[in-house]
Image (tube, rainbow, N blue to C red; front, side):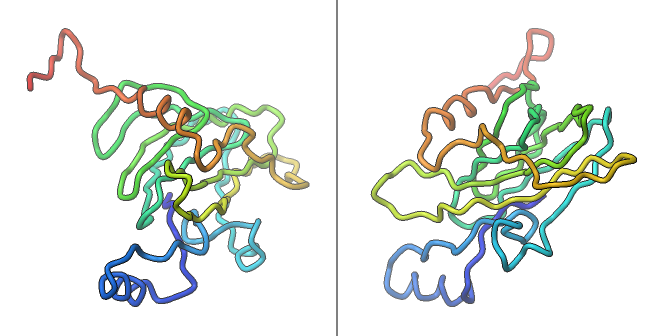
Length: 191
């Protein structure tokens, strides 16, 4: 799953202009999940990415921040994520309501499809920024987790109540503080 950014312009021209005048790249027009901003944006309502799941199964989400400049919070409504790896390395598993992922970083997280009532749930990605005076893209990208059962899900998906705000440093710090290697007494990592 790729979280990223979208510009309503040629990205190469944006980069060339930033290099020419020595400035930052203009902020993106939208965040994306698998190339789409999601159904909160009329332009991609029909192309919103959907993942079909079955109750009782566990799914590995390989989440990649393919964006250029934004750290992102990522969450799935009504579900926890168990982080088991980052950047190609296993971690001591830990369970969270959201992750924070930097540009170019990868996360491996387990999603347990444990909602007995089925339904539809948004996956959402939102920018995380620490400096209040720097303008950032504050859009929220969405994709949908859909339980597949005998009765098709109806109505709008649930939105993640636990998706942190754009400048929630405490949530970002609490998340990153949980990242640990698999090192143990029996398997030490000598540096």
